[in-house]
Length: 163
Image 1 (cartoon, rainbow, N blue to C red):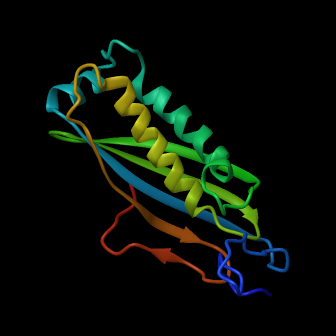
Image 2 (cartoon, rainbow, N blue to C red):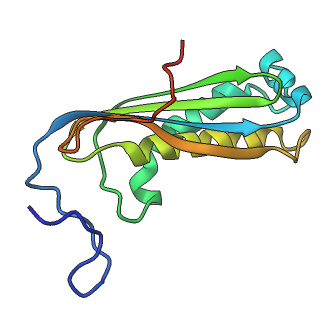
């Protein structure tokens, strides 16, 4: 199997060859946060934002983004995604946390898809709420967990399962 490198022997960009890798069940979980004014968080939680259902639209945006990842990330492989979940958690007084989990059975992982889902869900939240709060900050987007594949399992230290 070819070395896992996005550059050839001359330093030119290339897509990594994964054809000889075995199909395995894979999952990735990513999280991120949107920090905002407490009043903005309260409007989202109450479903009172003028543009509509912020969390519903952000969930769909995150799912769509996971499916579009190879069109957005230059060296990402098209992957047959078998499932995507995007969820939210209110961390008072001023944080809306986003979690995306993406699953596949295939030759390469879905970390980029999970990170992309979180990022686009966060941007969707910003877009839907910017009229009332331009101070929002998208922060702390990170991989929490990944399973499957040759490298096995990764679990970020200090992170806990959502209840």
